Amino acid sequence: MKHMLSRMALLTAGLCTSAAVLAKTDISFYFPVAVGGPITKTIDQYAADFNKENPDYNVVPVYSGTYQETIVKVLTAHKSGKPPTAAILLSTDTFTLADEDAISPIDNFVKTDADREWLKSFFPAFMLNGQFGNKTWGVPFQRSTVVMYWNKEAFKDAGLDPNTPPKTWAETISMGQKLTKKDASGNVTQWGIQVPSSGFPYWLFQGFSTQSGAILANPEGTKVQYDDPKVVQALSYWVDLSKKHGIHPPGVVEWGTTPRDFMEKKAAMIWTTTGNLTNIRTNAKFDFGVAMLPAGARAGSPTGGGNFFIFKKAATAEQEGAYKFAKWLTQPERAAQWSIDTGYVAVSPAAYETPALKKYAAEFPPALVARDQLPFAVAELSTHDNQRVTKALNDGLQAALTGTKTPEQAMKDAQAEATRILRPFQK
Image 1 (tube, rainbow, N blue to C red):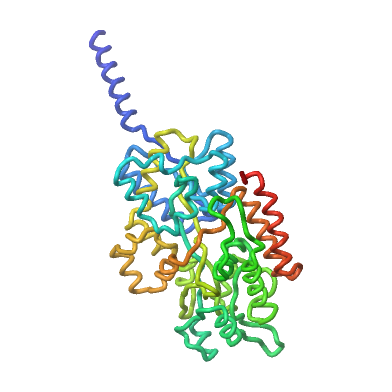
Image 2: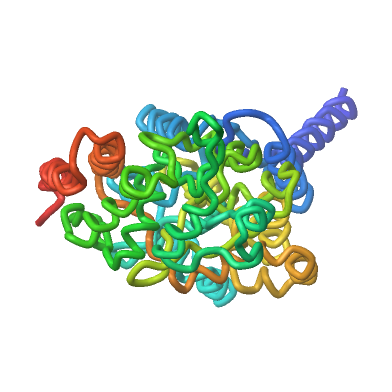
């Protein structure tokens, strides 16, 4: 009996040890993908590789729909007391997440010199939307700028140099006029240029407003300048591409169909995210180029895309694991491969020094355009109560583009609405 009890004690101790060894800290990781496909396979592989290298942790990807659907889901989970451990959300959600007390500053996890070097390793332009109040709230992962794509065959057919895209607003108009084609009935079969105005109208518009010399919001996210004369000038230029010059589709242009319109030769030049680069390279049946956005008074584009955030109500062990995963995801070699696989901009200069990205860029120089545009980039529009303040601008842009308001009136009304929303945040 005594021996039996001893064996049972040993067996119990062994089972406890095995359970302790097998215990893993789960890290729920919300990622904004609406449907399955190559990106979900890549993220699944990242999670599997990280888990293999870090047996104490178990990263569990959750594919949570669009960025807009994802922010709703994570804030609902936060308010219910069961948030994810980490998520990729728009960098412009930083004020909203901090105001909801939903996220922990990344600074809380930065302890060593190596940690500090890592935090300083990102492109400065990508940090603009993740920092305020002397804290870093999120780090770049899936980041982009707006760039111009042009169809070299269409340029050649129009008598233009296929290797020289427009570099200014004036050249956009003159080249766009040569590139716009009509059939015998006078219907346009190919637009000179197409800039989408659904989905993220404010983001595409920031290309024009930045080039006009305007900055839409202050760094503290408490004030906007939608009615700045430079902003009105930028909107007037966008409206006139269609209304006055006839080189741009009228009304609201769909975000989702713009890359397809380009690939189907319905538009000779388009503005869209660098995140469409791999898609267009894979599917375009013609030679195309990628360029920085044409300059107005200056060159420029907003940055865009998603940051990695860690949630405050997650257990301490989960947060520490999420921080480790954030560092792992953004290592130069991994950031380089992510850029190659997706078209997003690699988030650090070191990524562009890796053999893989050097080789890719040598074979496909357009991969460097967005990086080279970063010195001219500005923060993406972001404020407190960001969705409502941005909606005020989006509504104004669409009113001007559809002709229901003049650009001046549209921006005056947008400013009044945004000022009303932001008043509680102005101390």
